[in-house]
Image 1 (cartoon, rainbow, N blue to C red):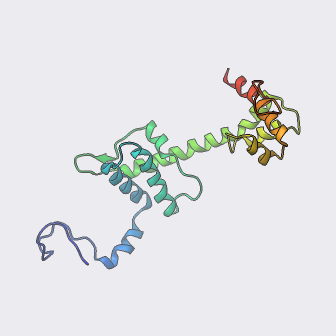
Image 2 (image 1 turned 135 degrees about the horizontal axis):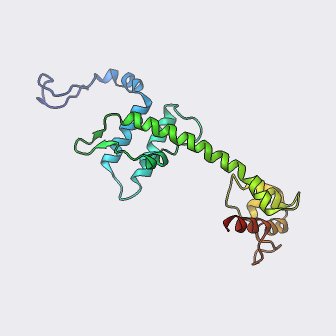
Length: 200
């Protein structure tokens, strides 16, 4: 069914806006630039501001969801909010509740900045096991040595995780985490000692 904005309820003659015929909606939606679509959706969501908290995080997730659906990104989510925090700019014209002119270019620039910085962060994370090995000096072949290699993926582990990831025995897993072969111990493990050394 054709709709329109303004004018008469019976005719499009004096309508302020007549959108495309319903048969063309799918084609025109597919034709919309993905960055423009993500920008418009984000602007509409943020102007609605439906939640008492977390609207910015949900808005960022919306941008990434549309970007994934439109194949702008295929792997990890781009941390748009981190780049937006470095160069804040309103994406809305508050009085009109509409996207600010040029905000699609701003969003594209923020995505590029965030992607570059994410690559730097990833490189730093992949370098961490070498830093840890230098500090911990774990015995080669021990569960602690194996754990240092694995920790950049799951940074929080318990004894069951260590056993599953490294193939260590229960005793070896507890020794890697706590420095003792049992759960209750105040002695620092090689991993803990290296962590404390890194904090000083």
